[in-house]
Length: 487
Image 1: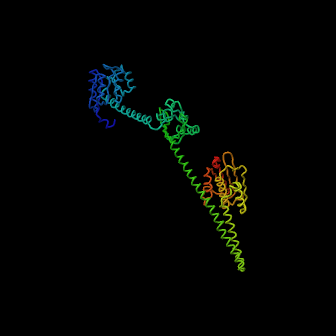
Image 2: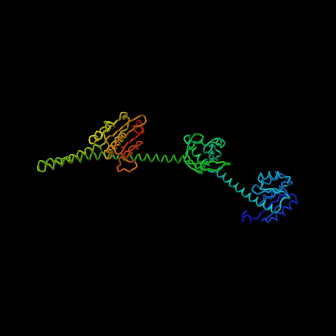
Image 3: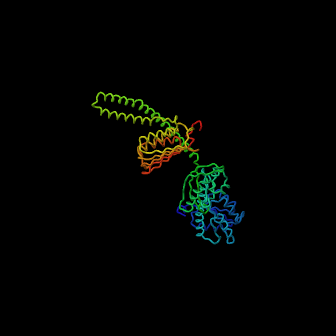
């Protein structure tokens, strides 16, 4: 006992009906030099119970042979009202077995009458109070644990990492999963998991059982009794339960949070699609406006300039060569503007179809570039596909051909457009110089391609390495491409 405990004044209750034994015991107590404030005396169990109800007692010295009770019953009756107070049993040699039985049921110590002095009595009282303090501390700790476990607002399970058997579960866990406690205690934690997570759980359990890992957390999918799936954030701790290693798991249901996040992500994607669609519509409108301006205004002005040059050649023959050279530059500019105007104008997909429009685009590319293009669309049919989707495919091909012309130094290009019952596939492969995907790119060509693909939930896979060309594979779910009235 520490110094603070030594100075605590004690109130001792002696339960003894023999006047001689009572006198000796009281005198021996006074010789112990214990800090005794009060000594209360009772000659029966009934009197002792009354004192226990009225006074704050530090320790009970109990004789088992009383007028209204005897033997083990004496201890039971007194202990019912003194369960938090240390009891020292006073016994004779003949009652040793009975004294040991009382200690097995909660008594702190026993003393044999006539066989102890003040030193032994001092130690017995001192040690009994200390052991009782430790016992009460453990009991309170156990009660706190039980309250924390059983009254916790979150589901808590204790399970065996070797057998996966559920060892304990609180009431909230029962309610959350839809099972009663008896059902859960016959189940394993594997029964609560989705099948695809069984191997992951086995690896997790092995860490707890064979390594120094003491806690872990993660996201898991669990099943309720009715089969509904829950998404849980589970915090797990290694504990000792009934003498062996166990896992205590605290479950936090985040199903609604995840669903809300998914909904927000879907709305974000939808909003981004709307933005991309608006941008693409503006781009198409600007393309048409610029194409019309180039064709109807700029080219007309250049044509007028050509006419003035022709007139000047007649009036100033001495400058004919210079004017002829100027005429060639203007004619070249007119041709370049015509080509640019053709790339900007919306293709005649509605009249000739997507495949023919792509073929026309590629013919113009081949006419002015030194590489071969192999285009195939044998399995592609487009009668039930929306015009907007066809236009996006055309622009993707056009965008990538511009990239190839500007950057790739390719000699061969292969383009495949195909369709099956589930999807529409587009691949554009060149044998050019390639590039590192991790390096930032100056142009916005690939960004435009990906934006148009995302508009129709297309999955874009870009493969390229220096010296190994570039391969763009795009897969579109078919339902996103169909005409609305046939969707």
